[in-house]
Image (cartoon, rainbow, N blue to C red; front, side, top):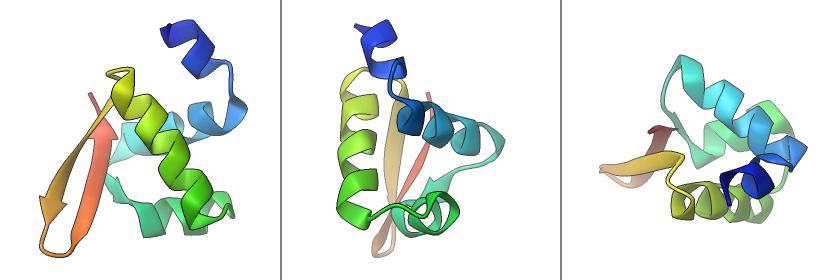
Length: 66
């Protein structure tokens, strides 16, 4: 399952960005130049695969590598 998740280049880019520090969806959108729904979709797949986790900080959700 994890290999199929990592086959998508955008997901690997997200993981590379999250390796350095946790980031919000908005930061990932800016860094990847991808739409917010697109980034959210990839994050959901990564979270479901157990590769990233999130936490709520005020009104934003921060993601990090698990």
